[in-house]
Image 1 (tube, rainbow, N blue to C red):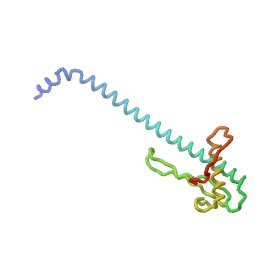
Image 2 (spheres, helix red, strand yellow; image 1 turned 60 degrees about the horizontal axis):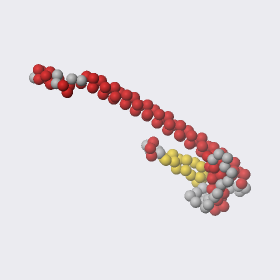
Image 3 (cartoon, one colour; image 1 turned 60 degrees about the vertical axis):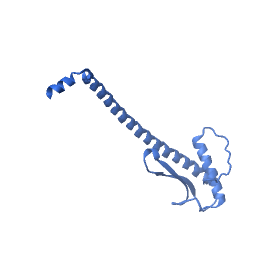
Image 4 (cartoon, rainbow, N blue to C red; image 1 turned 90 degrees about the horizontal axis):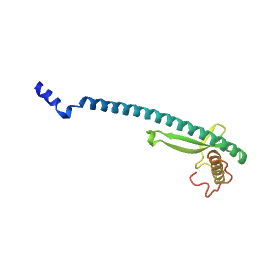
Length: 151
C-alpha cells in the first residue's frame, strides 16, 4: 500500500506538485490580503461619505435658517430645517429619509400637513435656494416649476 502511494506520487502529473502548491498558496495569501485592504478602504470611504453628508446637511440647514429668517415674518414658525433619518441596513442598501421640520422655540414638528400653502411654497423655495447655494458654484438663477411638489 505504501509502495503504491510512492509510485503514484512519482508519476509525471505529481512531479511539480510542491511548486504548484507554493504558487497556489501565494495566490491565496495575496488574495486574502487584497480582500482585507478593500474592506478597510470600503469602511474608510463609508465613514467619509457619512461625514460629508452630515457636513452638507449642516451647511444646508444654516442657509435655510438664514433665508427663512430673512423672508418669513410670521410668529408661529421660528425656523425650518431638513432632518435626515438614516434607515439602517447593509451598506449597499443604506438610504436616507429626509423630512422638513419646523421649529417654534425648541419644539420640532414635521411640516407636512401642519403648515399653510404659503408657508409650504416659501419653504420649498428656501430649500431649493439653499441646495443650489450648497452644491452649485456661482449660481445666479434658479427656475422653479411647481415648487411645492414632493414637499
